[in-house]
Image (tube, rainbow, N blue to C red; front, side, top):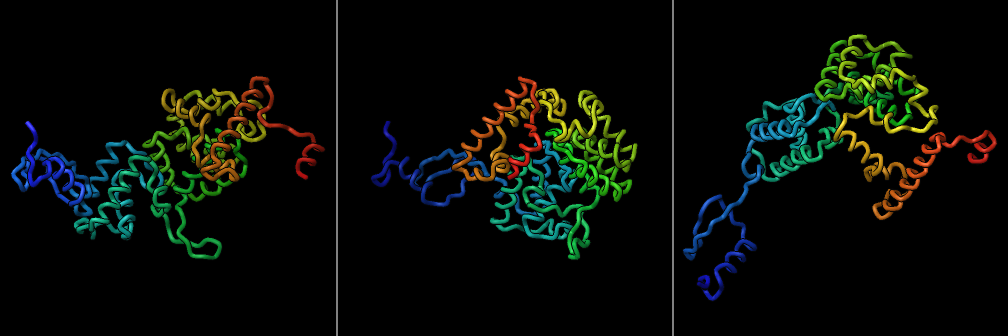
Length: 341
């Protein structure tokens, strides 16, 4: 049986035209067309249509963050604080005042902005401070180089320094200056700050990225409390502890020109997905990282050449490792002078 023809135009064509040209608010279920044609429709309504108040969006964001098992520690320590910070920042409200706005009705554009930032936080798993380019949590007013400024509290600053210094240890590029920076900040951390560093590291299972740099810094500048090192050490894998205890600063810096074994890299990562991801990153770094390494090839059109250059260097490192040669080329004094000129 042919479909009914209403007004000289097939029904399905008329329906398609209406959906294309008109703004129709459908609900899930069965509806009736103006000419009596029954329509079965199913439309998923997004959060920006369902949630109207700040309280609604706070509940929704916390649920999404907990379901995604996100990590915190870059200014916040839990899903509630992270959600509150992102919502207040997106709505251009004071970040230290939540209660006055909880029952405020939001505009459609504001609801769309909140839906986008929450989806981005879950999808990319980037901390809130990375998405907003701000780090207002755990800051205090102060002075920097004679100018008024917001300063990170010592505990939060030390957490950042420890993570980045451990990253340099993985890449064998840590310097004594990095450890000195840690010692300077550590001297300003109070017991409550140390307890917070331990709590955040345990909650995020990142003891293996906080303990190594603090432990190494403590060898030269004994300012890290023993209870902190003992608490963090419990969460560090045994292979990594053995690797750290087998050498000192010279093994983790540019001074170590020997070939890098995969076991030295893998001991920092948990077996399974983490090690696979680490291997993938070594073989195929992210575009932004490649752009930092080769700034002259940072434009999108030139990125293939940057990856080609990286591949050639990787092959060269592999050959040097197979031959047992140093990972860095060492020049005689006269050669170094010639290269410098």
